[in-house]
Image 1 (tube, rainbow, N blue to C red):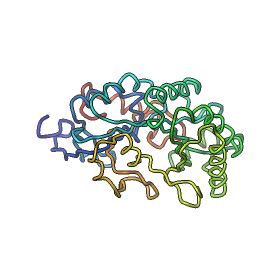
Image 2 (cartoon, one colour):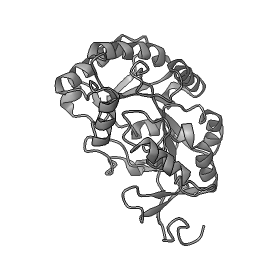
Image 3 (tube, rainbow, N blue to C red):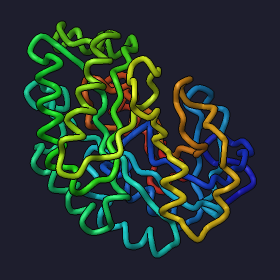
Length: 311
């Protein structure tokens, strides 16, 4: 690589994260695996700060111990998992599976049955500890009451729990761009209020306890009042990464540290993200990572073959 960043003509900062996140900003497993594997083989990628495009970081994989994948359709990831493990990286997968087919909130996802089969295959092949089921985001509407949502979560949990170890749930964050999309799609859809959040959390704990194989239940970035008696979740969980890398003492450098770039109630361990906003063609109605369908199209059309950054 040249001394200066070929994208911006500037010298990039350098980071050597112990944990790489792929990605909170987009669905790398579903749409960007060729790029990611090219960069993994090259040993580095570039990450452009989405809030300051003049700030570019060279992310090296040299010290990386584990890769945390986030996806709603990880089928394109599956063929690459043997190589990822052979290269010495542990992995875990945050697999978001909601049952919002009736509401049309996830219009471009595969059928629910396909997604459940994919999760089962990954859990059976690599072990349930590698699979984290995300019920995210939890939201309500006129025909989607708290009892209806809990009934759906119960049905999903009975299918998923034999193949996963953890369930992370999160409530909808009603950003302005999300509010507009939801209002246009169905004006009754809304983020649960305080009492609804408490009721959903308690109900989820109850159905989880009744599953044949209860999951480790955690809440993502919520206040203690919203999820009483449920552990505050660390989606990037250092304890889990330690279990996946039992012979690697290098992770102790992260002990007691928190990712300062996340929301106030987030308990995640520090990591570096390789993704980019406005690059996920799933186009879920509630998505915070896309501004609009046109923004996604424009961003993906700007991509250059062989780029060291996702965009």
